[in-house]
Amino acid sequence: MSAPPWFTQALAQRPEHRDVVVAGARVAYRVWGPVGAPGVVLVHGGAAHSGWWDHVAPLLTGHRVVALDLTGHGDSDRRDSYDPHLWAREVVAAAAAAELDRPVVVGHSMGGWVAVTVAAVHAADVSSAVVVDSPLNDQPPDEQRLRERRRPHRAYPTAEEAVARFRTLPPQDVVLPFVRDHVARGSLRAVEGGWTWAFDPDFFGTRLRLRDLLPGVGTPLTLLRCEHGLVSAAMAVEMAGLVRGGMPVVELPDAGHHPMLDQPLALVAVLRTLLALRGPSR
Image 1 (cartoon, helix red, strand yellow):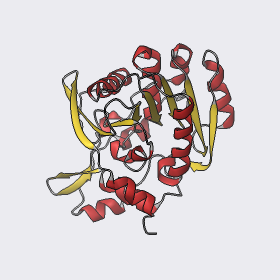
Image 2 (cartoon, one colour):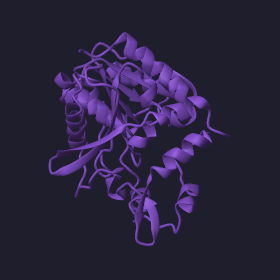
Image 3 (cartoon, one colour):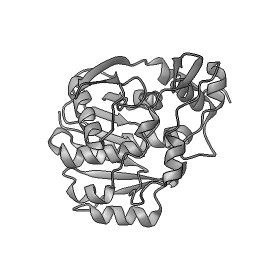
Image 4 (spheres, one colour):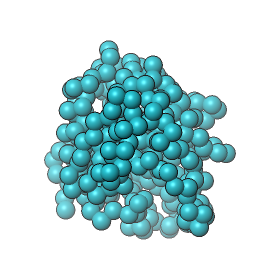
């Protein structure tokens, strides 16, 4: 499947690449849009990177959009250990460095846990948060699976071979091939002997339970539930009940856990609507 015009036009709007230091580590981020426009921060999921938003951010027209690489991911530094509260500080720091004034924070999967942490701990720094298919995360990680995920990455002799091995976590049956190719190529870094994945496998096992954070959220919060994702309809109702004053739940029909990979335009339409209804302060 060839890339449609909307996709190639979005990628043609190249972001500015910057970085900011947080607690001794360099945090890389991308920024689109003019200073002074209402702000949005996009937070990727686990083992992903800011490039997962390259075809989404430019379509949030009228906004200044930041997408960061959480430490341990993408072009950001690695740490000896990872803490969602420190990742939340990285989100706030990147927003401030890009001159965003109380932005909307949008987080996918693990990034949604970070977005809720921002909304609970740094409520004065953001106007609202949007969580994209982030489950409650009540169960402790399976130790065997955790050991497997933490194994050192193998090196592939060519980038093409590595791209061919790209898989989502969790696995997803439907992925638009042109999006997959772009995201996969951005997931690599050069090493001795070829190419490997850019994320630090030691981040796996970092724990954060939304159940503990949702009652303390101090800003408006919205949940986007993917029809074929990790948040069931029953879980969405339970999550909304944990938030003081409730939480709107919007279902993305026929979307897997990674909607930017299979239903990006539906995701953009929902985000545009939420931004129009609940724009950040200027």
